[in-house]
Length: 371
Image (cartoon, rainbow, N blue to C red; front, side, top):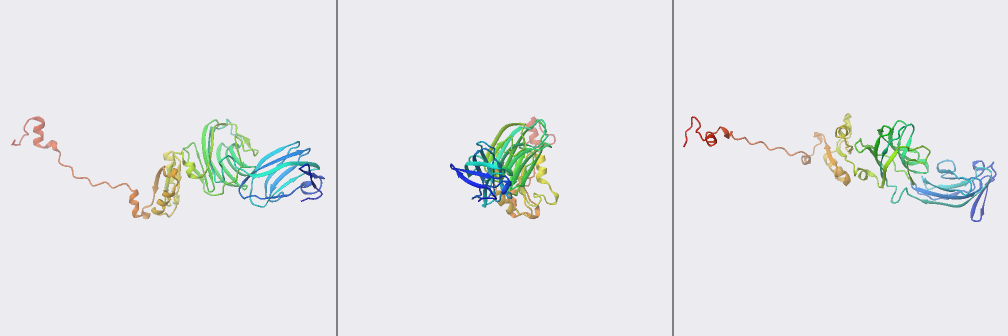
């Protein structure tokens, strides 16, 4: 489709984009508009090989300027562009165009579905990273990032200028989760474990800090993994990274495996009603993360069903059940300590028996007759 006075031609199996530099889309003209079939919330890789004397630009989106998924500029002289984007729907289009006067050619162009690493899918992932914070926390610095081209879809572990470590999830340009693990001093060792899955975002610092959660939001589509940077323009990580591991699969089961945490369940008191802060108090007292699944108004049958349905890795953890007396069920006795049996009366002390005294000393007890 031609725009304004722009023209397009095929030259030696290449798409030649030319523009007059004054009219058409982009003050020069979009050379080609090509429909692209995509699946919402999937990541796609883009390869564009150009044979240029001047630069051309490439956009992929539902419209040229509105709802962009990807916006990239190619450099002149045989540039090869490789990037990725996250689709937000099925009505995407490819817009290669010349933003200024002149001509440029595209030799090869391809779009295909991609993943951030082998075995990864959009079902989620779990990351654990150990390292040392920078000597100076002067700006936002990225420890690790999974993203899809632009800063509209990403999973990010970072330290901000205040020294706080955050685990952030961004979906379609909006913050889904921002888990604040607190301040870590400069030049200090740390360990962050983070789990990402739709409606299940978890993070814990050093294995002993409080379990920070966000149980809402979608899993963003990501196609690239970058360590010590995010590729999106923020400052590179200038602290240390001792170990970085990432595994496919999110959710509490995958996340909880190596963590020495407690599982807390119960009724509204466990859920925080009336200002009761049992789980957080327990976390501070025990010095261990607490995974709380309590829900207001639950009976012991409902609590028991939830415990039985928990992932195996969670059922292996020490579990505490808190339920108010008025919600007790007859079966709650199974969870109570066994009652002590009444003590039997103790026999009189034998040491005062006359015969025992004689056996011990060989003498008769005064005032007694020996048979």
